[in-house]
Length: 157
Image (cartoon, one colour):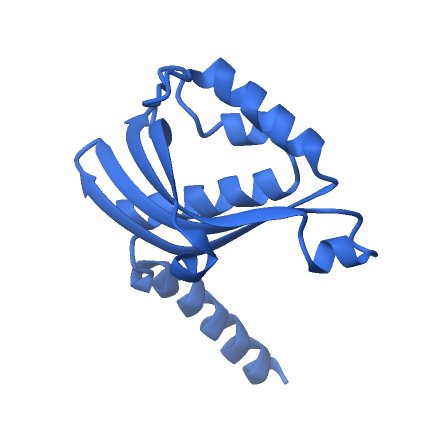
């Protein structure tokens, strides 16, 4: 019994010491993808503050919106639909030092209460290609520019 216990402790010790060394480091591309997916999750929850934690204070888009305008756009969209669906279909990322660009295909839907047909057949929705410019600020990837192109449901799949 004592030998079995010592064997178990030895195996655990080896795992604790050597397994972290085998872990592949996370690439910056993967960090950007993770941030984008986390932001989509926050948007599904209609968490404006959480979404904006991934948007730089220096945010500007080609339509002239800054971070504060983006906050208003999110508020209006989230208030307009009882349920918001965001389905990230594809993310392509290119990192160059402390700057990155990402192209994200998403399907956005807005529906009613999830217990009604409105959740199954959304009131509103579409497929979009989102082009993002990101910079690393204080070790975190932050969105500094975003453009949206309506590509329709089919191309977003």
